[in-house]
Image 1 (cartoon, helix red, strand yellow):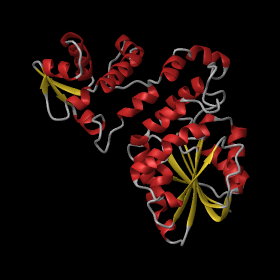
Image 2 (cartoon, rainbow, N blue to C red):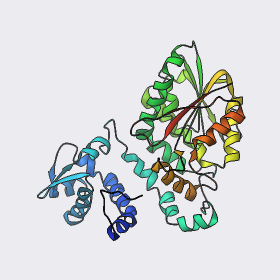
Image 3 (cartoon, one colour):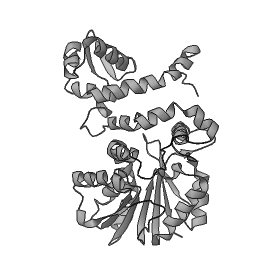
Image 4 (tube, rainbow, N blue to C red):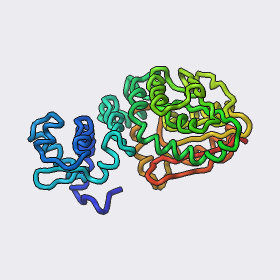
Length: 339
C-alpha cells in the first residue's frame, strides 16, 4: 500500500528503501539525547552540539534529517521540538516511548532484518539465538524498554476489567511472560488483586524493579521463574493475562497455550489476550508488518487472525472472545470467559 499523500513514482520506492536510514537517525537522536536537550525550548545549533557532545557539522546533518520528517522544527540555525517529539520522545514525560529504539534497533534485531531474504527462503528465523532461545538477553532489553508502550495498553485492560475486579472479594491474577510487568502491576492497583508474575529469571530481575518504581505492594505479588510451557502455573487463577505471546508460535503451540491457560483458570475465570490481529484484507497494516519481525526472529511466529483465536478458545473450553480496540494502539485486547 502506498501513501497517496507521500512520495510517488520512483521517489516512493526510494523512500521505502530508506526506511532503515530513518530508524538509524531516530535511534541515534534518542541515544545522543537530542530530544532531552530541546525539552526546555528551541536552541541554536552550537548549543545543541555542545549538549550532545558532538561537532556542529554532524549535529546539523542529524538535526536536518529529524526536521524533514517533522520531529524537529527549524528556524534559521535554531531547532526545536515538533509536536510528535514533544509528546513521545522527551524522557520522563508521560507519553515517552523513545526507549523502544532499544528494541527495534537492538543489535539482534538490526542484524536479523538484514537477513530477511534468508528467513523468507528458510521459512523462519535463521538466527542461532532467536525468540524461542531460553533466557535470551533480548528479553531483558525488552522488559526495560517497553514500559512506555505497555502502560496505555495496561490501563486499557484494567479499564475493561475494573468493574468485574471490584465486584469480587479477591482476584487471583497470573501475568504470563510478563516482561516489564506493567499489565499485572496495573491490575494490582486494585487492592483485592493477588498477582503472580511469570517470566525467565533473568527478565524478572528487571520486572521486579518496575514493581518497586510503581510502589506495588510486594506482599500481594509472587514470582514464577522459568519456561512458561514447562512451569506449573500454580492455579487456579481468576484472570490470566497473555500479552504479546501468541505471535511467537505456530498454531498447534498456540492451541496448547490456550488449553494450559484454560486449565489454570478457576470457574468463572477470564483470559485476556493482547496482540496484533491480522486480517486478509490488510485492514491492520501494523499486524502485517509485525509478522515480518516474527519471521526474522522466530521459527513459526506471525500475527494471527480473530478466527484463529476463536478456534483455539473454543477447543480449549473458553467462550468466544470479546474484542476491544483503542485509538493509537495497533494491537487489540481479547477477553474470554471460561465456559
